[in-house]
Amino acid sequence: MSAKQILVGTISGIVAGAIVGLVLAPQSGEETRQQIADSAKDLKNKLSKLSSKSLEELNDLQDVFKTEVAGLSEDIRDKVLKLIKKVKSSSQDVYDEVSEA
Image (cartoon, rainbow, N blue to C red; front, side):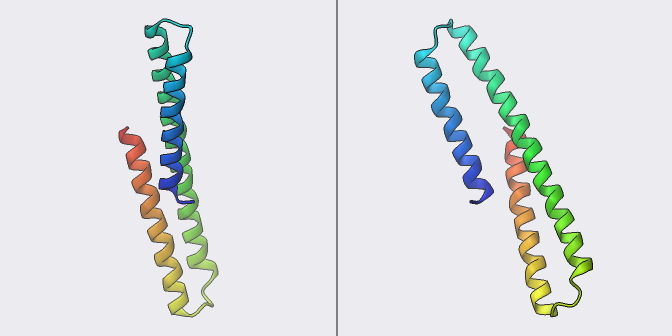
């Protein structure tokens, strides 16, 4: 699963949960809105940490690959490095979207 698919699934789950919460909540509207805002803020923080951690791990993977796999043919090595950079770029896009939310 791609990071974008995970993000879309997570956001869809939050929206569905919020709707169910609004319909079934025994609290006042103000309390419910505050609870939803708190949950959204908590989710944003968790997604930011997850995205940041993923980027760090990709950087580590790239460093290890560059230094430890020098014996591979240049063509294979270049293709793998390009793939790692592409994944890092996609992860950065997801991290940026989460940070802006």
